[in-house]
Image 1 (spheres, rainbow, N blue to C red):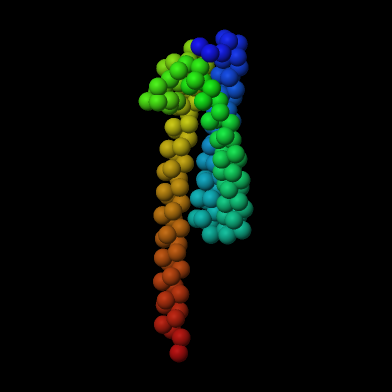
Image 2: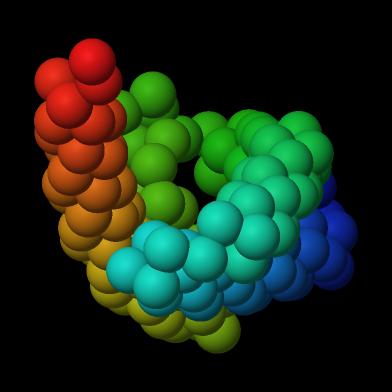
Length: 148
């Protein structure tokens, strides 16, 4: 190891704190996607726009935080001299000691569940919006045919 045990622990603490923050951010994305789903179904354009803006802010925060994650992961990878194929969350979990490996494992499980729920909801939202656009287009076409 290149760093002292205390410094490695500090880095692992910071990385786990980052993971906690990212999980919270992604859970907030899921909440906003649920609100977008309700707004879409209710055809509440104003609420939909507000929630879309909130989603954009959360995504900007995630992108901004990514630089810190890369730095922390890079330090852990260097410390444990992980080969490229082990430079994944699963690889880190396999290498770092307790209690950090347990925190990372919990993050991994919760993040997977959150992302899967978000993916499912985004697909549902897309289908709802496409159906709504189809109804709108058919209505406009019917109205155009009724014009003298």
